[in-house]
Image (cartoon, rainbow, N blue to C red; front, side, top):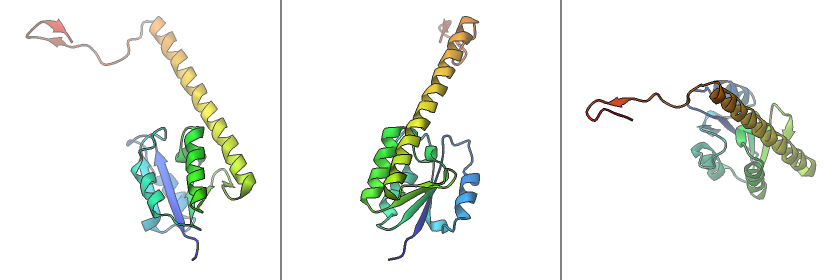
Length: 156
């Protein structure tokens, strides 16, 4: 059986576009019927596109993804997915990073890069939280604006 190419593309929100990822991956020769996408955070495992690709791939197939963080956000999730694909005999290639899960070195590099990506995500969250704290100290209000229930004259 010949190796088949599949594509997985993901963006974090429905407002973001998959076009750039899909263009890059199509240039690698992926058939349109083998393109799977999600518009949801990589921190969740419940992604319909990912679930479908897991059902469709078979031993010897290869999944193309533009970057590591498109497959998953957290190291444990990435390692779980890579092991799951490896157990199925499926390789994953990350085009922008120039790496593949093929071989021992490939798996090691993926594990290290996943950990680095997770650490960077944690740093971003820390900086965001620090910014919120500073903004609160300066009097910035977060959340939606309060409204008044005219019938009861209470603030909601």
